[in-house]
Image 1 (cartoon, one colour):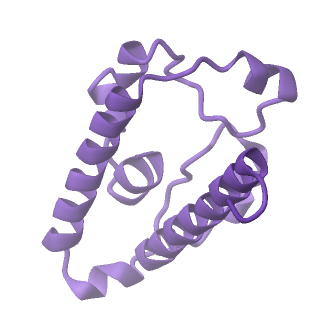
Image 2 (spheres, helix red, strand yellow):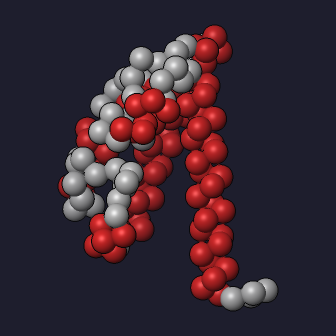
Length: 128
């Protein structure tokens, strides 16, 4: 949401505009970036149906955005930073194009799927 809605499109995040932070009883400012182990341990268990609803809304608006922009727009260099409160992100995202932002998103999703599979494997055991 922040990467595509805010960083790429320059709009207010759905997380904020739809008050999803209130629905999930979380901080509006929280991103998870740089969280300590203590902060992660205190993170609440979230309602799966609410998370799915938020995910589907973000997915829908992202697909609508992709359908609405011309191909040449993917080369546009963005003049924003998706996580200005996180110092390493300021330098990292400098010069990102729209296409690079989507590549970043795809790469992050791929990494997280691998992490989830790893954790599931630990929980279930080998070959189960």
